[in-house]
Length: 376
Ligand code: FES
Image (cartoon, rainbow, N blue to C red; front, side, top):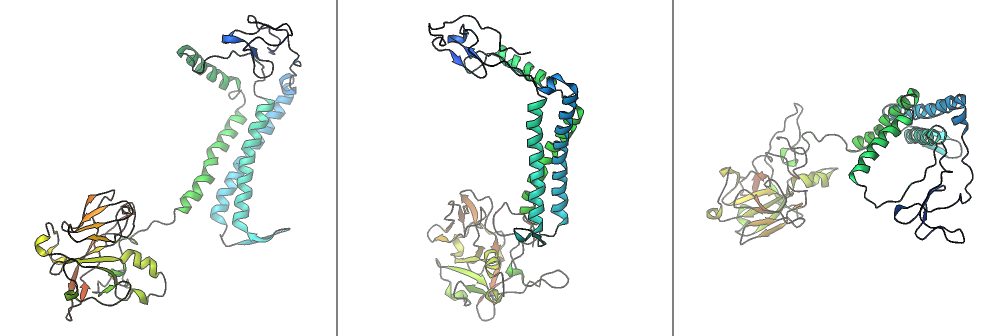
């Protein structure tokens, strides 16, 4: 029904025919006055509401329904094409496109299929709204912003009725095609996100250069490695590590790597300090140090900054990023800040020449706690 011609009553009209004070024109002939009282006016000149062909002719409505369904199905096909292309097309494959030249085939197909997916939904929704959705013009009153409980309840009822009047029950093709289009639409969004997360780290984080090279049987030789000054790359004698001193250390042989040196160093970086053995309060593994010399991972267990600040007096290691503080006298337990676990300890001893060497690798993964941690 076209309600435009209904005449609101009450309120004022100026002698010139203007709307009364505070009268508000909304949309398409909606006119109301102060305090929700409709302004009294003749039809101010809005054209009669034109009825659509689909309102008058069920055949036209059927055709529109098929077009809308077809567009949603196009979206479904686009989405399915995207999924298939994502798995089937080699990421390095290229294809010649006239006017562009050689281009990446996967990106091209993903772009085209996603465009079909989006366009299908968008055009389908627009065509549906323009041809088949209810087409009424109504006069509404402007109220205070917050509705009272009764009206909010009424709104819920109207919403339900709206869904009913959208003919979803009468037009199952649209209902199911749109459901498929919207349901599958999330897949192209999720797939690249999951793919972009990369592979699971496995034991990559619990194995560092201190483990040595992996052997054919998949095991690590656990070969002792000298502790080398960073960056000088010279070995450290235990006698050089005086109480209160601190050394930044990397494993022997790390700089001989031909590639991924920084990555290896990031996992194997160690900080070495000497404490008076009487100052050590807690030491789970008593033979992991040497006469008060202890070595801990330098990678903060919060989000991985280098823990480089050592307070000699308190024996605290500080992470400059978010102020996590580790107490070296208590196995590098976290005593302040956001880190959730102690710094992993590297077991050390000395070799025949008095140089500091590792006794074995870290027994747990170094680095941030949110990384998957396994045992070495
Ligand atoms: S990275 Fe060390 S406290 Fe945040």
